[in-house]
Image (cartoon, rainbow, N blue to C red; front, side, top):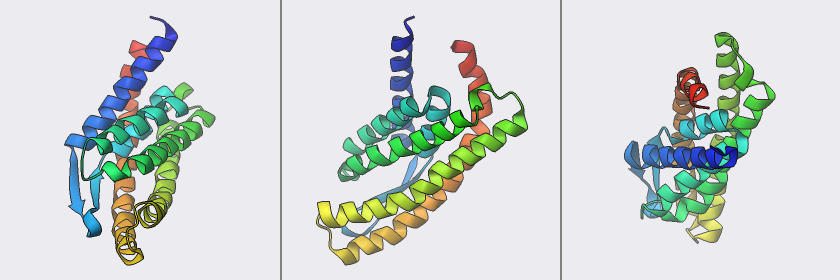
Length: 187
């Protein structure tokens, strides 16, 4: 199979996985002003996508899959632009750090755990900072939600995003060695 077609196919597959994980395996938490947050493992899928496919490809897979999930769910539709930006950023940061530390060439399981932990934790910690801040600014200035309501949403979003970051970091570090062995065999 042509290398470009294979790469596009993998991006589409991982976008679909991101979509399915967020759409069907999340816990929704309603907030003020009709907003919602969710506890989910989708960010782990974005990180895994970036490790297996590369920073750009994994970032695109996560951004597209999770933005489509937002667009198709009326509770999250207004979050789609923010989701696209932040999920792409998670993929780029996690994938770039893993690439710089030669994750795909590493054979030692202790070094693999270290690289995956550092790259996932860094990307998802950045998301813990940026998601609430961008969300606040987006809700206040683009969606016109009053500052008080946007501040309440900011507080809840920060807590849920931090919880998701911890769970997704642990999940991705555990899942990567299992997936990489299988992924390497189909390459």
